[in-house]
Image (cartoon, rainbow, N blue to C red; front, side, top):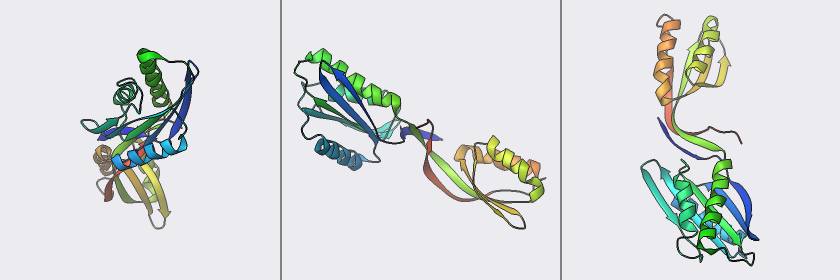
Length: 213
C-alpha cells in the first residue's frame, strides 16, 4: 500500500512582493530532529535576513507531527499560512523555510499572508515527489525459454528487474510493491505450468520517485 508522498530532493525558489525578497527552501525531513537541523542551517545561511519562517510536517496521512513559527512577523501572518500550504500539498516528511529580506514597504497582514502562502505554493508546485512504498525484494530462477515471458510479467505487475545472472538458468533479482507480488506469482504459475515461484528475500520501505526532477 502507498504510504504517502515526500519531497524527492531539496529545492529553492524566490519571489518578490513590494521589493521584499522571499526565498523559500523546501526539503525532505525524515523526523523532527532532521527538520529542526534543516531550519537551523537555513537560519545560519540567511543570518542577515529579516525573518526565517519555518514550517514542517513529519509523518503522513492521519499520523502527523507539525510545527510552524512566525519568526517575528505579526502573529498568524507567516508560519500558519506556510503550514496550511504544506497540509494541502499531499506531502509528508517535509520542511520549509521562507526567508524574507525586507524591502522597505510594509505589506500589511493580508499582504504577508498572501506572500508567505504564494511562496510556499511555488516550491510545493515544483518539487519532485517520491512515494513511500512497502516493497518486496525477491529472486527467481527462470529457464531461458521462459525468460521473455517472465520479463513481460514483471513489467505487467509493476515490478523492476534489479539484476540478472546468466548461468544454467537466469537468476533474476526483482522488486515489487507489496500489493503487486501475489498477482505476479500467479502469472508465473500460469506461464510455467506451476513450476516457477519467486522467493521473497526481504520486505522494506522504499522511496519511489513519482514525478520527474
